[in-house]
Length: 224
Image (tube, rainbow, N blue to C red):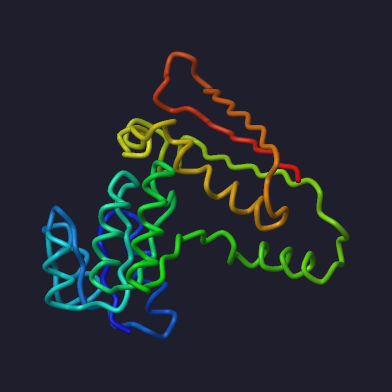
């Protein structure tokens, strides 16, 4: 299976390692608007081709699947572009930034016959897989309530002065938009359709004079 990757930021190496660990290591090209960044990553992992234009990668390499690892505001355009070229697509979460964009992506997949998948990776963590198996077997009875909790501190990718420059802070809803899909898809896995969701975001800092290094906690509660 020939795979192309679009977006060569901090999550792209995780995709490269996962692809190779899956036993299907034929990564045929990397694409990034900043091709020098793509070349650095390609050299690091021994990937043969780099591009700064997705059309060129699709035309020259004809990948079976394309991983979209760019910021969310570009997901819809790039996903539709790859689907219309006949490639399957794995797109990072959040899938996109509006319902209309999601509808357009789904419609493109249906027209092309290619598969569209969103990278909801926490579903495959060992602890979550264990919980899923227990629920599926009926060992826990009927699940009627789920808490989802996400926390990061000032030492993480989004904390501190450097972290505050991350594109996630510029999303509608800020950095929360980048985290919320994890909690929602986990809740939906165990509850099915969510009839109500309550959310709380708590921001605190150890030094009130330094607003650049917050500790943020997000709590969602879902019921069906």
